[in-house]
Image: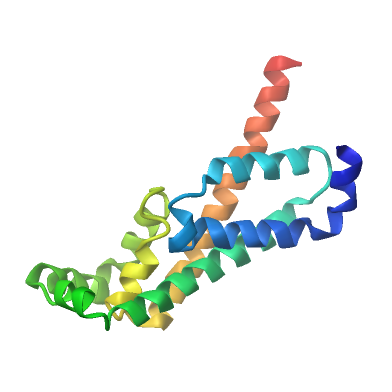
Length: 166
């Protein structure tokens, strides 16, 4: 099995990139389990088959692309009559005003760490027509720290596991 994995070694970053896109994309992200992907990444890392920098670059690029796709999907879906009707509700307009003025970064930060909202928040922001430039700046920062945070958790967890069970 390890020999087969070593043959795929040049493709690991691409595989992680695709898995990251699918993990965050609204169509598949609600059904895929990110912890399984993280366990697989940890296995590759502990076996020495992938470096930390490769994991960060592939995961970051994948999660960023996934949410960009979500955002633009929201922009397309906001013109659907049923969605348009829901978006014109007074409470939604109040939320939209808050997100346009001061709450966008906090909204992205909180939603990024809640599993059920992670594949959906960029879709919502796109459908609310939040400026893409504001979205991508905040999303780029939060996505980077999210990837690094979970990578640290994985690596330190593996160190703790070895320490306790060796």
